[in-house]
Length: 90
Picture 1 (spheres, rainbow, N blue to C red):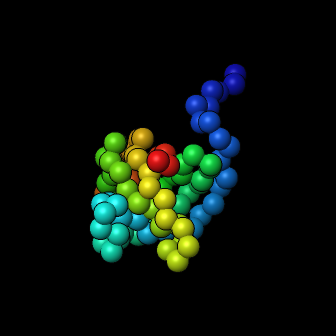
Picture 2: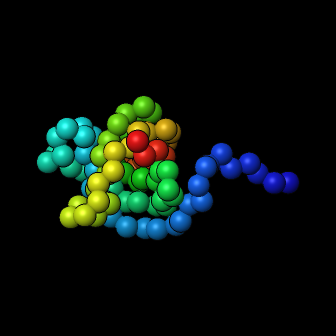
């Protein structure tokens, strides 16, 4: 039985540390996370801070070269230690 993948773009698995700002206007206040996968339209972020569906954040994949605004499309708290969230670039 085949499963249906709602994603528009193919994901690439990657595990790398990233920084993100919960308030895109205050990028000096960053938190740490781990990028689990990425595509042309979004990424999966692992973090110790719960994220809320609809929340806008700024992800600094390479703080010196690349930052991208994104919106949280889904978020799941696994335990008190980490949250996994799907982000769509905006």
